[in-house]
Length: 434
Length: 196
Image (tube, rainbow over the protein chains, first blue to last red):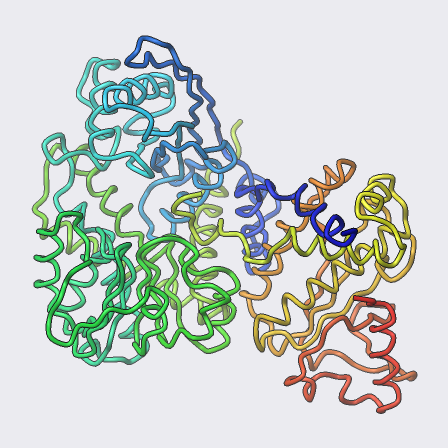
C-alpha cells in the first residue's frame, strides 16, 4: 500500500508536465553551436525571436455571444528576407510553441536557400467547435489584429494545422480591404483563382521524391532496383508514391489511417490512386488486387524494403520499432517521424536519414514560387514550377550531403548547421542597428 | 503539438517514471513515504538531494543502456556521490560510448530539457535551473586507470562510480583492464549504493 502511494506521487505531480518546445529548439541550437564558430553576439541574436505579438481576437458566435480567442504571430528572424510561416488553429497552441516553430521556419528556409526569414502564427481555438462562418469571422479578425506585422515584404503567412486555402483566401481579402489594394502576395497557399501556384498541392510529395532520388544517387543505388514502403497516403505520400513509381521504383508497402497494404511485386500506383479517389473516405481500406495483402501499420515500417518514407505523423519510428526497420534509407516526408532514440538506433545500423527539414521542404519552396509570381503578377506554368523546385532541392541536398561529410555529422545535424549558419552569416553582415 | 518538426520532438523516456523511481529509492533508503521525501527535497535537505540525484542517474543509465549498442557504460560522480547536494546542484554523468555521434549528444541534450522541466515542476526553488544534467561523453578508448586501478576520465578529478554497463561491450570498456578483484569491488560499490 505504502509502495503504491510512493510510486504514484511524483508521477501525479508530473502528469501534466509540458516540455517547452522553445527550450527544445534552443537545445538544438546549442548543439549546432558546438559544430560552428558563430560569434557569441550573433548567437545571442539567433536565440531570441525578433518580434512576438499576442492578440485578443473577439468573435461574435452564431448565437450572438462574444467569445475572445488568443492569437499569436511571431517573427523569429527577418535577416534573410520577409518572415515566412503558417498559421495554425488549435486548442493546444502556446506562445512558446509558436516561437519554436517560427525559429524552425527560419532554419528551414535557409537550408533550401529561399530568401525568407522565419515566422509562425496561431490562434488558441478548437475549430471543430466552430461553424464555417465563425471560423471566417475568427480568421478575418485575427488578420486585422496581426495586420500591422504581416505584409508582402514583411511577413507572409501560409496554411498550417487546421487552416486551409479557404482560410488564406479570407486573409487575402481582409488584408486587401484594410489596405485598399490587391495584396495577393501577403499569404501563400491560396486558391489558384486568387493567385495560388500551380503544382503547390503536389510540391511536398514531389520534394520527397526528389530527395529520395538524390539520396539514392549518392548512395550508388539504382532507383529501378529499390523497393519502397510509404506510411501515409495523403497529399505527400500519394504524390511521392506516384512520382517514385514513374521513376521505376517498386512501391511495395502503403498505409493510411485505414490500414496498411503489402504488395511484394509492387503496386500499380495509378490503380491505387483511382481507387482512393473514388472511395467514400478517400482511404486505402478495401483496395484489392492480385498479390496485395493486408498488414499492420507496424509491419509496414519493418518491411524488407530499401527505402522507407514516413509521410504521416510525428514519432512513428521509435525506440520500440527502430531496431526492426530494415530500410537503409529513410526519407522523412512528415515532420518529426523519427524520435531522437530511433535516430540513434538507426544511425548505429548505418541507415541514412534524409531529415524532415530538407525532405519535406518542397512545400515552402513552392510557397516562395507562389509569392514570386504574385509579386511579378506573372503566373508560371506548372512545368516551370516543377523544374525550379527540382533545382533548388537538389542543390540543397548536395550542400547538406557535402557538409555532413566534411564535418562527420548526420544529415539531420548538417541540415540544421547549414540553416543556422546561413541565418548567422546574414545577421553578421547586416550588423546591429543603430 | 501536431506536425512536430524533428528539432522540437521530445525524447521518449518516461520522465515521470524516472522521477517516481528516484523518489521511491529515497523513500526506501530512509524508511519514509514519498510525500515525506518530496518535502525533504523541497526543504533542500542535502542528503536527500544527493540520494535522489544518484537514483535519477541510475535510472538514466538504465534507460540509455536499453537503447542499443551506442552506450557502453554510464558513470556518476560529483555531488550525487556525497551527501551535500543542493536543490540546484546538477547531476554529473559520464557516458562511455564507442564513437561520439551527434545523435548521442542530441538525445542527451533533449533528455536534459525534459528532466529539468520535470525537476522544476517538483521543486519550485529550482525554477531558474536551465539544466539538470552535466554530461561528459567519453569514447571508450579515452578512459584510463590510475595507480589504484580506478577508472579515470580526462578532465574529471574524482573517481566516477559505474551505474550501468553493457554486457556485450564490456570487452571494450576500460574495466576489462582492471584486475578481477578490483572489478568486483567496483561492482559491489555500485550495488551497495543502488538498493533498487
